[in-house]
Length: 429
Image 1 (cartoon, helix red, strand yellow):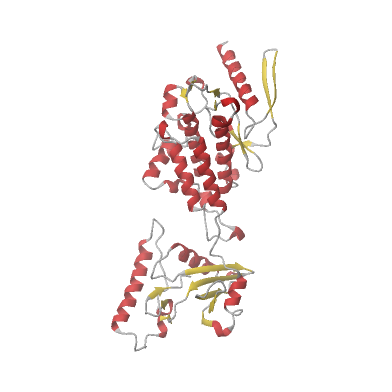
Image 2: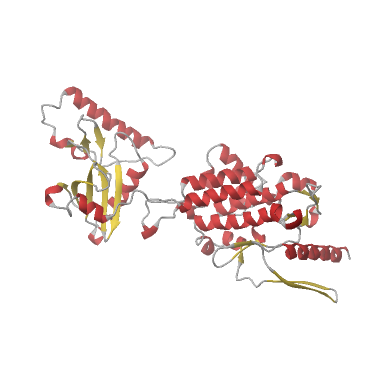
């Protein structure tokens, strides 16, 4: 009898909420309360719960960083509406925001569903009480204060939403054993600790770390750094242990919109049009050729967008030759910047052409100057120090990036400026 009464109360509450809520939530078609039957008729969803996308690999691989951000924003806007934007100053606490209460459609739009535990929040109160024994979520999805007191607040929804943000970013459930081994409170507690010791990004789903931009060319992998930083900062704020320090859903939505904006505006500013390189080198005229190797020719020229002289390395990648060298060099020059390493101006991947564009070293390579009388002992020592400094930088790694082994140190790969300042080049191997 008690269970029947409880189920009826849940059904009535769900009905009331769905009658009022229509934005970014599942749509109520109608209801039936007849012959002891209590039935809610909802829109027919060509949707699946977010839970499926988190636990099934074949679905999780379809979630790019941008899609994940949009899902988070849809849910965030739905909660913001419930907390602040309903008519007549009414407020609803969802009280059960977790992956099984979110449905995702074929276009990766998200809606909030399952209002069984939801409650109206009266204007003169800041919490509602509920029966913890009948609650659907685990302690990993709910803040400790709510779990222990049975008092649900707007801050409760914010915390649960923060857990959801981490699940989406990390690609794992909050109560996954990998997190429970180090903290019984699961993902949120582990993420807080990792944020403060600087290792939170290591928890990000490897699937989004391997994303690349258009043309399947993988110079820029993973989400835009500003986008990811904004996302992680607001996610950590949502799961703050102190309820009073958590942001409102208004603030959360604003920060997620910034994160999505950073991602949308992320441009590959290093990409150079083939036509611009051709103009700079007079269509790769032989008079501009200043070097040649097994899979490459090197040309000197001036890009139309500026007066700076550049050097363009045109790789012959027919039959796959030189492809690996091209990828190696471009990735390293993009990630490892140093005063004693030749600077990357840009690159071109177009019409089967693969070109790396470097800063210009006016004196060319060291092998051309070894018998130059201007190469004094002091100058030679300074060149040695410059290259040793570059190698020390590469061997030490930076910000936990991999150590780089050059594998082709020789005079032809050491480039010199007017003042005999030396820079290490040619990272193909």
